[in-house]
Length: 373
Image 1 (cartoon, rainbow, N blue to C red):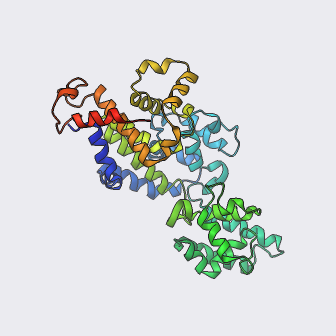
Image 2 (image 1 turned 135 degrees about the vertical axis):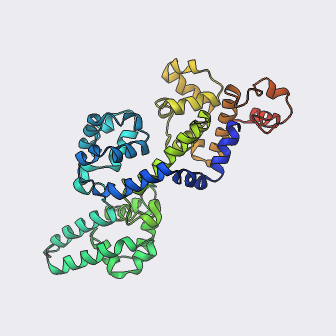
Image 3 (image 1 turned 45 degrees about the horizontal axis):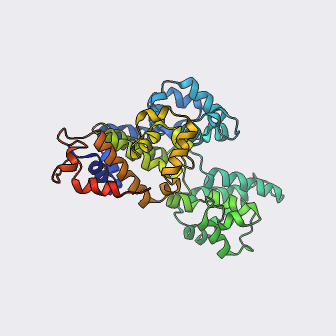
């Protein structure tokens, strides 16, 4: 059996290939096809939870498969949505619930929840409002004609240049946010779209007129690339999450340490403080193992745990792929010592044995000792 670090590196060396392997598994392929063929037909929360196959697929995608039986609990979360900071999902410590409700946002988008795209539904709604403000009947032949053309062609737009290169679509898109394509500086609009809205210092976020940020949010090429005009979290993004969850689950069947490492790798960029780590038993387990702390440390005062983690590790490193890789090398090495994949390999024998192809080599052990955080 391959060592923990070797297994982890083989999977992450070409993550796309590893995910393709998961996608090709007959059960995964069949369930995914069913999901994509049917999720857009769901028009209500009741439709969603009553279709056990769709609901379980979605719950697994967000790491909530252990709660797929608690439908009343999830219905409450879905009904209250995430707009209100005090909604049920937002008040739960586990943010996976809020992420799930955000993806299946029936509270905000109603029957369009599983097909809603800002670049389509939001823009056309705004366009009708702007027409009314300008004194034009939203039900006029002109408005209807422009909207029909827009909806028929906007899904074909795969880049900023595509959008700006079609004057009719471009004019419609800007008009939906109260911007006049005839007077707006095209270079500035391009910069607005290129910068997106995730960075507080992006062009859109620094301009005084909030319409620019709204435009960049609706046409979020910076975040969603070629899928910007069709993006809906309930569709392909949920499938992508399902595949990643399945990959981790598959790895865990033979080595739980690999599953934990993959999970930490996925969650690392979202970690902002040590309390996020401590609130997640899997993340906390990885941190303790990497630092050589016993499981009993989990029973210590939470503030003291956070303080120690902060002294030993720099949380900003988790946003740096190279530094994160170094940390996970440390974790997988420590996991292997505590849970050797070969009975011939122990923390003592590693120190004296010649390098071998299974388990931890002497060189690896020495390298591990040099790691600093």
